[in-house]
Length: 237
Image (cartoon, rainbow, N blue to C red):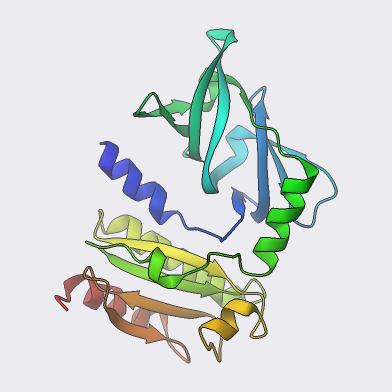
């Protein structure tokens, strides 16, 4: 159970140096800053303040990295529990507590404390804008399963649609594939230059042995994406 849940959370995508809040109207990139009274607190990169979102209306929260937080359960609202927050999905938070992974429904939690300073917010926003100091495709490839690296551009609706397809296919693979996303502002972005990207979006497929299977970079269809994933899963290279 723990392994399956871990693979699911990994497949929920990673935007370098940014937390990502998925709500019914779309997706926001920024910084998670806490939870109180069944509401998540989140400040988007282009926001002027922390906004509040009803937990029941949030589809998921993916984090740039696990966060050290204080958790207060509704049954013991004055007794904080130290934990590492890993994310939020399907109305449940996932934590690491005392070495064990625990999944807790939002209505069983009264508060999650995580304080973000203005300096930290500005630093992470600048890192995200510039692609992050540690963005590396090599480090994102998972051994033992096929990996999709998606170079995503927010200006392209096709990129979001194709990314959603990849995410769904990886979930349906039952641990055989994982989806990773890198946000690229445009072809002048440092990441685009680093990997010599001439078009956006792009989808790079890697085999379970971390070898390149195929790179879809220009004029490809959703069927091409599905076939590329099937081939990368089956490949023994």
